[in-house]
Image (cartoon, rainbow, N blue to C red; front, side, top):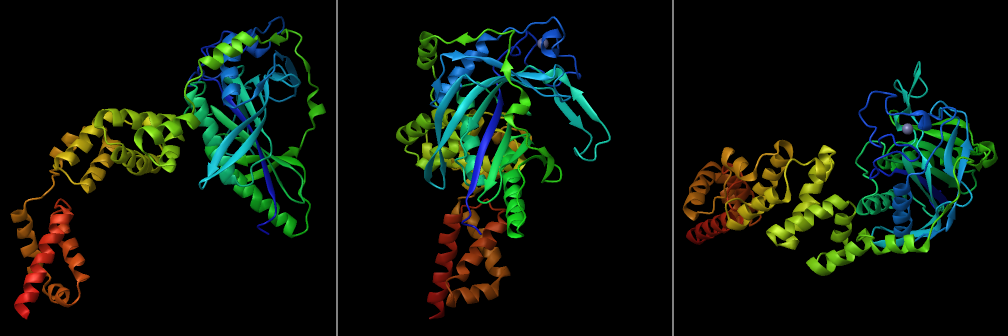
Length: 480
Ligand SMILES: [Zn+2]
């Protein structure tokens, strides 16, 4: 069953959050947190007599992305009306692109478990975001539907891939890379709620293509796809045909539910938007944007390996999130030990961020404070183990590391005399273990553990081990 081919294609909708205004009117692009239906005007609502005018910056930003995705930019692009009757569109059509999209034929290389894979990009186009529909609880059980048009008209970039992905993990890797590219370009801020959403097409050999709609964040994609693969496989196993349909991802219940039979393209009755002229994109404009492209994740990865001697894996983890890589580079510029700094960022810090489900930019401290923490380890004031504890406290409280160390009385005990006192205590308390350690060297580690526990893990483990070993050795000599 597992060698049955799975094909996954993605349609990613990314808001160009770098823009100040909506795509076709001057309403502010920052709609979040505003009272419902207050961030609107006759144009984005599509009231009779209003006319759209294209935001030039949106085209420039979209070209940046298309170039970064190695696409061919069409010199002539046309906006279309995509007609459909749904409460999230007050004018009953969405201004989108159909023939003559902004760009086609690109590619992105992803890496899963150390292996590179090319994912082809079918097209990149510009369109307006619809309004937001709000249900009470789940879509099926909600007694009513609320609609908020504040989001309507926000500039969206739609990135459509070929069905080149074969596992949910590959889909996740693609989305992570796309998000990192958009953040390096400073076009879209993926940490904003709903700024990156996704529809996924999935088919299993022998079944029809199913579209999963409304996956509200890139994070949910892997879950939705995994669920859908199991559902379709079970149907095929029972000899039931998988229907061609559109399904909705219910985040709360973590299942997909049938929405409607899949609409065909002709159902949308696409026709050129008569209120907007076709846009000619000049070569000079593309050239100028190309020259100003910032460093992208793929190039940055190579540089991090070269400049700091990181492994490819480490560089990949860092660049999967622009802000994480920025944090690391800032830390190295202050503390100056790439290996240790990278270890702290990708192992300790990233684990804490995942555990608390927050981003680097949510931290209440900067790389400067982290460098202070590492300096305390360098000075021998605290152990590496304590440093990890202090880092956790920093994430939780935002307190300065030196203050945490002071308040909690954390220090590294390295004085032989002081540690010996604890060793005396432990040897007295665990006589049987001491006897056993004389015959069985492994038990020495248990004694070391007990000493460390007595010191509340503050004693230097290496020095403690030396003292305990020496003491056992001496006892053994005496016994002879
Ligand atoms: Zn408006």
